[in-house]
Image 1: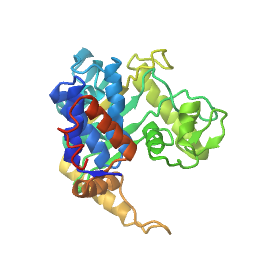
Image 2: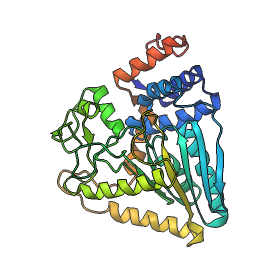
Image 3: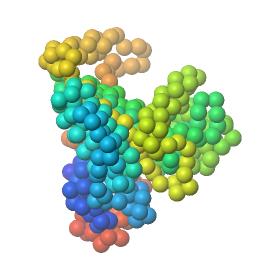
Image 4: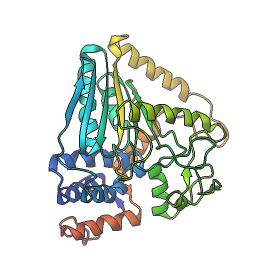
Length: 353
């Protein structure tokens, strides 16, 4: 697998999206989120997604340059229509608005509907944490095809329905949670298919409801399982609540519509820490709490205890220095897109690639 610098991936992705009809400013926003996912080690939400996004542009499922409108609002709430634009663009703008409202009201929330895939959720909650706020976001896939079976079932009826919360602190790296309510993100299954590797036991079942480690089974009538293994009813319960917040509260609904158009709905919120206690004191105590956890003696086989988000921070430090490994299948797809748009040589694909 080639190892590529983050800056080069940013350049390649921006050029491909612009060639596909995306305004340069939007292409830069999309690629910032995409490359940051790779840097954090969430390769399932990184450049592997570029061919899918471009295919959705060609089919009219993503509309570059789409308007962004506030349908309804109050001093502390917003309902936002993304008009089928890039989810990265629509949700980033929604979080900025929510942060501004929370500066005045102390707490603010928003829903966003009719938008493309919003990627790694921590991208948005970390915006709030940097502003001295606790950030929260949940997302579903609207009425597009589902991938996750309800606990005890074998048919996919839910999305991976992730949740992220980020907390301000005085730690060197950010403290945050970013998790799917399924055993794994659907993108991780796609990544395993691209790399030709099996997935761990307990992630998926085949079309007959039997456990499988073959990632190709997911697209052959199988399903992801809720997070929790034998206690999967917990992940299932969380997923149902996310579906209500992001599907029903947004007005997108639930289930699957025939078009199969991917349509992330999301609910996001920001809580200004200063509205509850002094920010500096809070950040210091969160840092002390994280250190308290890190000082726990590790179990046999574990190197040490990390606070939530620390592994991603350390991985980003490494990948910024040493580059990001891209699976061969994805790299070949990016090269083919560049050739199709006549920009392969411009992007250096024929100079050692």
